[in-house]
Length: 372
Image (tube, rainbow, N blue to C red; front, side, top):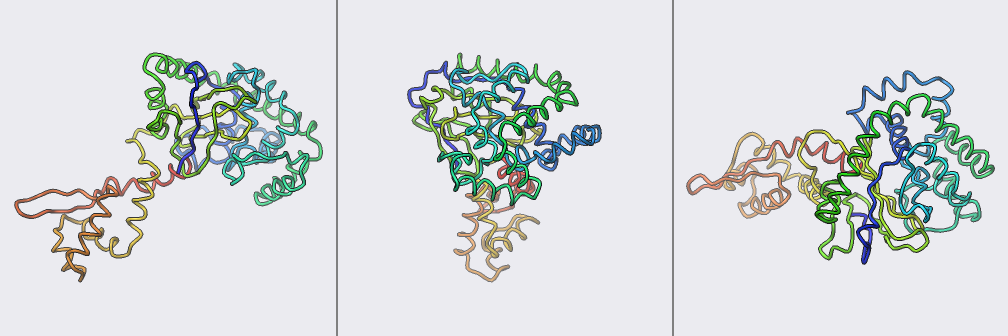
């Protein structure tokens, strides 16, 4: 499972690393709405939420559809404007001006779409002009609660009025807390973007992507950027409607999320975290799936129970579990392929033991994988 971006023939100078104040505000609002996704920012979310004025908190709750469980693409408005050549604004006001330049159909379509829906990368008419698209947008909003359903109906009925309301909301967030946030993280994000740009210039795209995230890479033909996610999606960096290119946006609030904007008619955008917990690199989605599958068999669970306590030979495991040695060997091979076992030889005996560190990380690896 992955999202990939076709970059066949794309010149290196069309790949842009740049922070976006509006994208970072979107991540900050997501962190406030879903603090469980970001346990490392618990202190910031608690203090910021407590300091919000009731009116602002109420309005944020009303519009949470845009940044709560999923992310709206409207905070990446630059990706729909070909004249920007993939460059976000340098200030929040400039990014908001770019958002205002989206026409109503594109704005409403992006606001009411969600990136995990099956039709996300297929494109299609805006809910403003297509009855079926409107019905689907309202259904998605209704599932998320009456406030979100009401917000969606208002946006469909009065796009200019609600767009002005959303802009004022973002401006009030800047005044309430985001100006201080951007002053603190903006320099860090700009520094990271310059470093990645220099890495791209000096060592090439593969090396630059390796520094973005272990989950972002080039395929063997070096014609696609592959983002390792529990999702399927694809797009091309050569869409003439928005100009060829890819933009990579660093975020200090991003972890564990790694977003890939791959909607049709938009420039591809990868938003990556610049900071993550101090731990080894998470496994690929494929390896994580193989580990969970390996543990889904009741006999392998019983074998793991023995191997968690001490090392055992194949014969010992066969006698303890009442099965043949070849059956044990097949189960051990699956566990070993999933990276769950440690094996060592002692004389003529081969001893197997559960890798407790790998198993202990399965929960956090699973959570990071599905949130990525």
